Length: 434
Picture 1 (cartoon, rainbow, N blue to C red):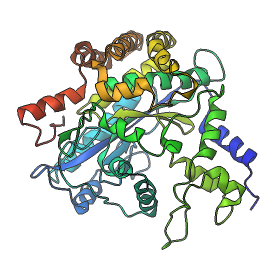
Picture 2 (tube, rainbow, N blue to C red):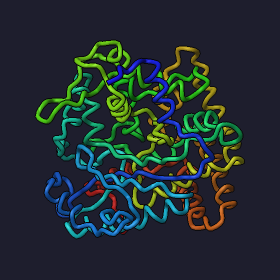
Picture 3 (tube, helix red, strand yellow):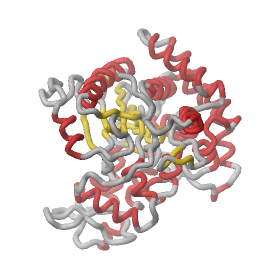
């Protein structure tokens, strides 16, 4: 094989991770905890999970998937992730995902199982790995060397991830502009949709414990790229090479553990047991977990899993603010004070999600006055954008109702969990809409 060089690796990452063109496609990845209706505090046996998945009706585009073609995966702690197919526009994405999620819920209900949308498992039940894939075993060992947070992330967190096209070469949808906006928008999304105030059944002091967990993990793969690169493609390519290698794929039966403190750049320079390939580089990129991950499109990873149909509100809000130029302008203006807060810390300011605005968002949610003001302006801008989108009336109503129930009152979904804890009804997870 032709040896992989640093310049070749940088060029490959820049080209593969940012597909340039007018924004068109929308997708969403929704994760759920699985609880046993008969005894929610008991871990769900893997056999029940597999029985539920195997009972799903087929009939998607390939004849083997859910009706709309969503992909299902199990996370290391038994969380279920439904990944919608890329859809042309917001409305098609929501319709496809709702159709497949209805089938998923029905299949799990038939096994006496319930899907629960929270950023961390709210119940005090044993957390354990239910998958023994060598990737996850190597990941567990890598993260265990730096504390408990990696294992908590793997087995005790869940999210909603919105996926949008990276952007165009220039104009209102320029990739640099969209990249900047999704990072500035991050604290508002964390705060407005914070939904993980409990861990092991106890309050943590954070509205989004899930985001706090991510901020305490390996910084080479969980912080945002350096902000001083003008071109996000260059920033991301450098980030990928500077991140530590989490695993090295080997033949069956051999562990995938990587040498300690080996970055991919070190590996290219001869630091590994063998020269890396382009396939190694692509796989390494899948082990990086910053708040926004480029995968050809932009994958926003900072939002806690939501109860019921809350994932639709997240998807609608983000898509409206990114794809409607007027809404994007309003969001930029609303987010400027939060960005200034981080800039006040100077050149040594921590990168998201360790920066001041992100930490306040994870701790206080929209009880923080500045985050609340920014959130309300962003919701209003999204409302106007959805009003300009034909057929979006139902989604517009859902977004408006969420804004009135939560940020308008200085609340987020985490406050519902804390209220339930105080009233003594937190022992069972929130009921999910069928």
